[in-house]
Image (cartoon, rainbow, N blue to C red; front, side):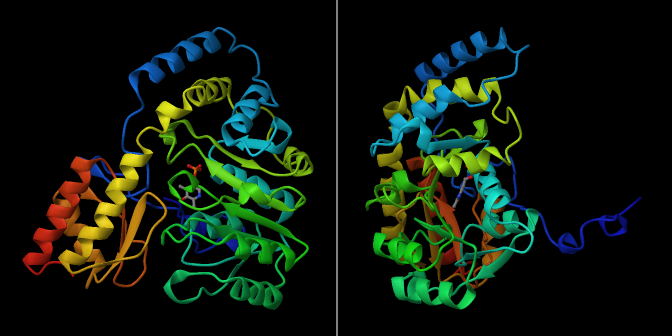
Length: 361
Ligand SMILES: *Cc1c(COP(=O)(O)O)cnc(C)c1O
């Protein structure tokens, strides 16, 4: 059998590893920050009705400009945005990929601040964009001074910021984003995949007068729509024209478009569980110290916690109990998604038990 190494693959891809969050059918899946609550049945019925209508026209290509979807997303975001400000793709991962295809690529670089979303550097390699890793302040914070110093040192073509940041849960102050924008003439993308869970202001409020600022969002997390693959960004209309140069024609299927429009028409119902999820997140942050762990503050739907002696072993012991969480490779830390009340209880009980028998923390 041929191995990958035998193939004439691009030199810059040799030895790299693909994105690999384990996918396992266990009862309690708290590893990829999905909304663990199923969508309301009434909304599901509406989506199915829209899909049934769309299937009758599936002999034709979909609307290449996904006009209705952009309209719906602009309405959902508010902040005076119109459909001309909106771009969408199959998950915000694809939005980020198209951004690097248009503004990055061979000979160009993107600066990020690990620990951060692992796909940022993977999408950089896929597009041949050089990945530069900046350092964070204590507690994974990122001050304006730290970001500006990294930008002045690295002179990147693109800067990726993530707020709230995955996997730490840290939200950035808008002053850090403003400073990053002003510190270079390149593109600044703020990944706001978890914005609906955060307390503070969104970078959407900063778009006016900043044509090089891109704010990406997703329907995969708060919106309980991960399986449908819909991500989007808001930016100056000129940015969407740049993305049109690299997207594949008809990249959003008719089914994706109508399903997302139908779901967005029910935004309040789709987001109904967000308060509950934030409650479970805050409950974990309150209870984990009682079990001997040190959770970081989080404005997302997950918690990164320290004090784990052997993350791999604790991950596996939980997995044996049917609970999947995430080892993100930070020494002595694990990350867990806030699920339903029952899932959160099961996780905390299992971790507490492991800790009491000396198998964690
Ligand atoms: C989950 C996540 C995404 C979302 O990816 P999709 O492709 O939209 O499912 C984007 N950014 C961050 C930081 C994430 O954690």
